[in-house]
Length: 527
Image (cartoon, rainbow, N blue to C red; front, side):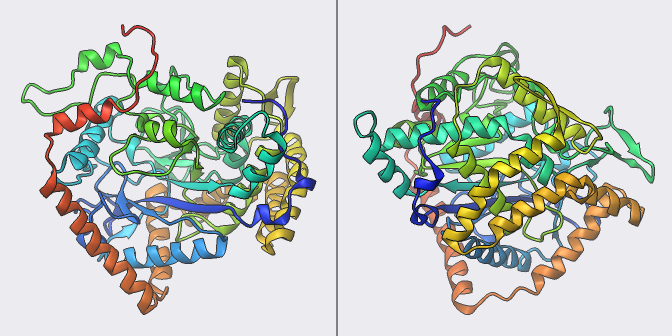
């Protein structure tokens, strides 16, 4: 861990900027033609969600997750996302993909079917973990959809830096330190992507019947805030108040592993009273700990390591270190059938490079609280006039602070554009500047404007967008070679799941005990 700059932009060769990898995980509820959540199982034509690398489910059987592979270019990533979305659309029948982060009308939480993954211990673990989420937080929160942007810096970067710092650190240590420096700086400025790309200023009243948000003047079933950017990232949505007591350190890999491991091992009094089993013997939760497993921690960004089937993420991080970052702050973009645009991804790359190039001292508790407060304020009121954000020196208007930060991003955007020949890096920065000067150009403002223009509530507006996006996906053509590869992947996933169920030698209880024992840590006494 360090608070000094490791890298200087002028010293980095262009080759450093062409070796990055990026990928997308896009969540989308399947809905019926009437806008209600689909009650059908995950489509068999999309393979087995436990083992397919591209088509899986998140919390709900109805919450489809489309996962790309890692790509060296934005163009290649967009092309794969188009193929995956078009292929999924072909097998939805009359169903559509919900185009907004906040869900449509839900009569009762039991309309939200919990995802199932078969009868292998691995599949049962995924299902019963989600049952625990339902008991802890309710099902409504679990069907909020988002887009996760995965990004890795090039290996050449660590090789170059190691030559200058070999006396103090190895390449792996430098890589881990650098990624955590980025995470700290990202947390300091997370309000920026929230303002620029937030796209959930409204929600259906069925999602949160009792809320301080007022109903829209054109639809009493829809709640909104006139200046909100991302209610998904507010206390109403994804950033659940139940987890506000959890403090996970970003001071470095060891501190992160220690604090997150402890949260998965310390018992919680409320969850202890809940118990792990119902009177009929069915599972309520995997355990009574603060977090059942580390995936339950709802962070805006996560360090990730290479995936190994059956291995806990913390164990993988401990053994192999940080391989890439998962940025989890993006709302689903309602303007794109893919849920995200290459321009948005280009801006995030510029932003992450800038976070790497800045000093990144440890986060104090006061600064952590300040960062969370700024993010919450922008989520609720980001487009409000004369909105003030706090920094260590006092308060400053959002538009002034944003303009200064975007100016600082300009050399990075220019460097990326020159190195890659991709104009989106500079274009994304220009678009961000325009949104900073004109809040009515942000996605959140566009949504409210369109809802008002169409006299449509949240669900009605989303349903209209879903139909429009379905038409766009139907126009995408999948080449014979790509189609054959997708279909082979479907068959392989089914065979892989069947093999897991056939060859599993452990009972679920044995498998769970071994899985949970995979990340020892020095924790305070269990209370």
